Image (cartoon, rainbow, N blue to C red; front, side, top):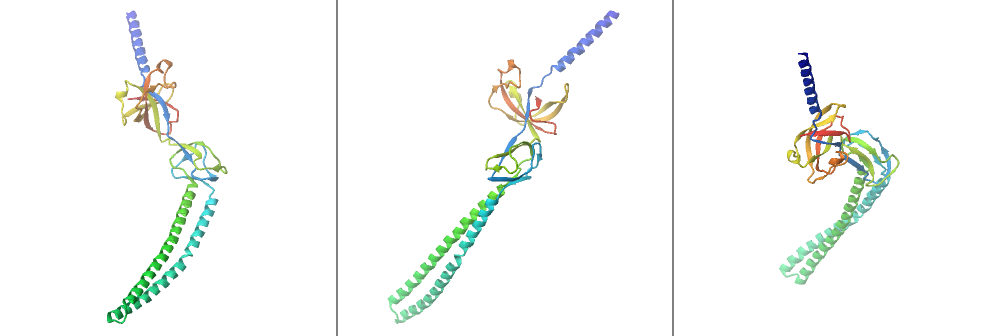
Amino acid sequence: MMKYKILNLIFAASLIFLLACNRNDEKSDAYGNFEATEITISAQANGEIMQFNLEEGDLLKSGAIIGWIDTTDLTLKREILLSQIQAIKSKFPPFDAQIAVLEQERMNVERDQERIEKMFVDGAATQKQVDDISGQVDVIDKQIESVKTQRYAVASEIKTVEKQIDQVGEAVSKSVIINPVDGIVLTKYVNEFEIAMAGKPLYKIANLKEMKLKVYISGDQLPNVKIGQEVEVLVDMNETENRKLAGTISWISESAEFTPKIIQTKEERVNLVYAMKVLVNNDGTLKIGMPGEVNF
């Protein structure tokens, strides 16, 4: 009797062990590492960096002013352009006075024209006199038009200079270093009092609110996934337990590639797989490069 009890206990223990092994042998559908969208912020103006208030690891908000580039040259250029506008405007009074004189002269000639036309009806003036006075009116009209054309050309000069002032204003606004996105500063490339040039990298920032888990799936798994599909994401909690997060497939590669060395064993590196990215909301615990798993 005792012998049978011992055998039953051994059988039960073996069954429990096998079930435990089966649970431990359960594998996720895909493995990979977390990534973040990294953005390199570059200077948009040339000059000395007068202020640059950030350090690696800082959490920045979109629209935050973190520094500015020297704008002395731009300010002087703007003052010169404003002086040019004043100089150009000083040309208007002579044109306006000349136009006023010609218009008065035209009024006088028009009165003479009316008298001559009446005299011509009465037979007291010749056709030549009528033609001559009409010709004088035409000449004055052309003179007025000529002066107005010159005045318009001067006004066009002002518009050209005003556009240059707008360009200077735009350059001044670009001298203010404004952070464009929410995120954490990953790398700082410059410091105060260094010289910035348009296009020169200032710092690198990443939005860590949403992380992307890049994994690789086989061709057999490909029919089971689609963009927008909700999946289960697992991250390590400790040596034996995982933490579950919700994820959404945001991208699937259209072409196959060989399995990356960092993902699978040597025997499996020759397999062709498809890259896939899963979007996961970060609660603050996910880090760039952290491993993760996916279940469909």
